[in-house]
Amino acid sequence: MSDRHSTYRSILIGLVGGAAGTLAMGQYWTRVAPVVEGSSEGEDGGGQQQKPKPDQHSIAPLGQVHEPGESSTAALGRLAYEGVAGHAPGKQTRAALSEAVHWGMGAVSGGLYGALAGRGNPVKGAAFGVGLWALIDEGLVPLLGLQDGPAGSPARGHANRLGAHVAYGLGLGLTVLLLDAALPED
Image (cartoon, one colour):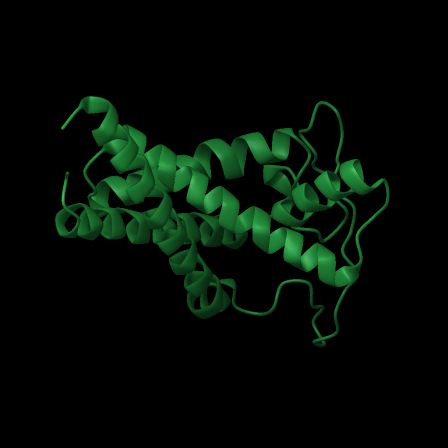
């Protein structure tokens, strides 16, 4: 089998692994993050929802582009929609765009993992997830103004995002390992 064919195969397997990793990340947010977080974020002492506050800790050279309380995937989806449609999306469209960005980033990152790592390995996958967290989630995303700067989130928030990315990497690495072993090379 040619190296080019092998690289395409690794990328395709990585794309599928990225989707599996994104599913694992979603399970982390549903099942583990509430335990790590303790009380619900955004609530005051009496259980009442607080209105999200503007980022006071922005590190973005061009300024904050996310709205208060908006996730980075929701902000990216909203900005793309506004760029194409010329107006803000509705609430349901925002939610769908956020999901689409989240799954798209997960799959594309998995393809990158496949191209770089070749054969899957849950430990390499977890390390890849940590790298994504450090470089993208903690670095690039705040620099682009798509989420609050590092000081704008409590330590538990950072820990949860790290945990979610480790879950993503484990799901990615394990799926790539299994698919690589199960699928014929030619």
